Length: 489
Ligand SMILES: [Fe+2]
Image (cartoon, rainbow, N blue to C red; front, side, top):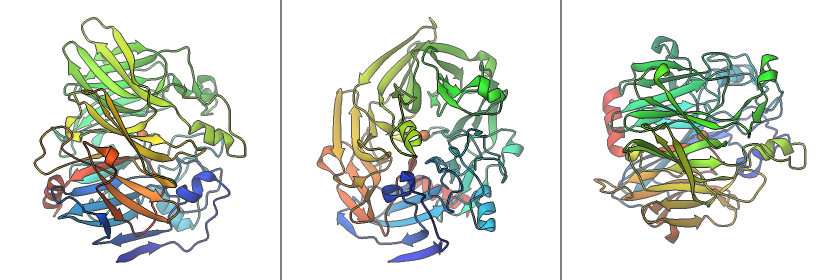
């Protein structure tokens, strides 16, 4: 039985934008529902919550809407004792509060104009709203949602999904958080970076498990850059200077035009987790862009990093129609790639690993920073808009690839690993994802055997509403969540 938590009644217009229609049409309500119907059986040997962030715009856009603009919404599916419950809530950002008060959208957004401003932190002016729609991590007993172009970290209660505030960046003495920070489950630390149009072009730091600041340092770059993520090993962090960034000439005129420079190398900076920016060591590799890293670890003198390499970051042309340019930029061709950085010789090597297009890689989160073999990705449907049509499981130890397609009209979400209780081994558990059935107009939470995704879901939990496409997710195991409830009670 679903209970409505809030319902929007103001009229909404998609303006014909394909990222606001069909699978991507935003929800107009927040719901909670318990004891959901299950097809199959939910295994009783795991518990926890799946959290997924994504854009879900509230007010009709005032400019050309970009998929990255929508207001962050968290979907949560909680699993315990073989039962499932669901809740969805918007991230109540400061910018959204201003729009709600005005009863309309106030920000033109990323594609509305070439004057692409960085978000105005915690405020209501500027072109781009910090909508906190990109990633969600479980840190210090709370959820932290982040924004792809650097912004605040919004804090949400993991049980109610209510927004409780923001990380106090001023008090911590840090500038902003990029799309992706990493939580090291061994230490509980949050490792983060940001970038900016003016020096320092990058900053890097570490929060302790209790949320206090452990480390913060500027990173010297030759100009403004737009890296999306970072990687960690147990002792090091890898930061990125990739040849996709704002055209520097236009940037001087305050115009933010993202441009790919295929004649420039990709540079990867290896820095000790708590070391100053002046100690960073840069390694040059082939030009590319990287949205997401699988994992990184230390191996003798080398740092090994695996990730999804986007080979053509800038579209070769546009697609037809008024939204063609926007659609073309969202089509990417990532493949599984490995880089090696030798700390003794200063040399870098790289190699393609699997020629299977996939993205949004997830691993057993306990292995971040340590050697891992197995990762779970999504595959893209051949369509004008971004649609995840299946799962891909890579196993380095066996050199094997498994694939599973959700079926016609069914599109999934990023799929994290959920460990079995007292799990032993990297893939001892489940892979979980939210799938939207566009024909039935409803969502499903699907649970797969992490060792065998090809047999299809072990259980399909019927959601009380459809689940639009989204971005990033995490799995918070039940034992970690129980600790957080104790901490904040
Ligand atoms: Fe991302």
